[in-house]
Length: 197
Image 1 (cartoon, rainbow, N blue to C red):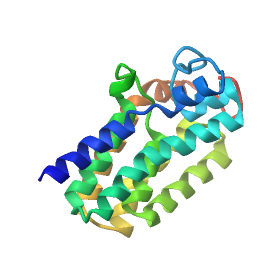
Image 2: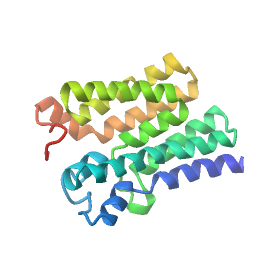
Image 3: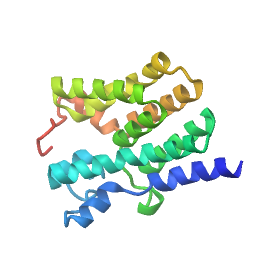
Image 4: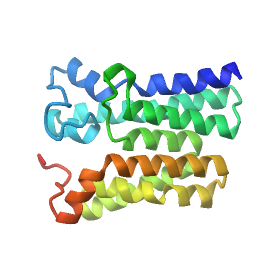
């Protein structure tokens, strides 16, 4: 029981490390919470700092979701604890205790969680994201579409109830965090990948 609690708590604390803020600080870039879309995520870092900074941010945010789940697996945690650890890491990114609970929107960390729980599902969701990005060149649309289909990917490729359930929660939270993007998409105002919007 104590190990299970430590895994969940550790997942949240690890997820609370804001890769975007740390990367921008180390690279002498503006705080992503005050520039561009004011979101501490890879897409905004791309706008204000370029591809290198964005890649580091993306990789770090993915690892925040992946590493806690892999550690839980190494300690032979059951599906429920794996799912709880994954959710905790995701919540840490959204509401980081180290940064006044002001986090990102969670796409990259959710993708890391997916690869941790099932690499097959991770690949499937990544493929959906890439396909949508190539077709429409809108990051938020690609993310929302791929994450909307993520629970179905689990149901198809690895039908573990705990994983499907936690993915439904993650998808719901992700849509909530993207509510402004959804309004902009519906109004035709959402910027495209590679623009300064």
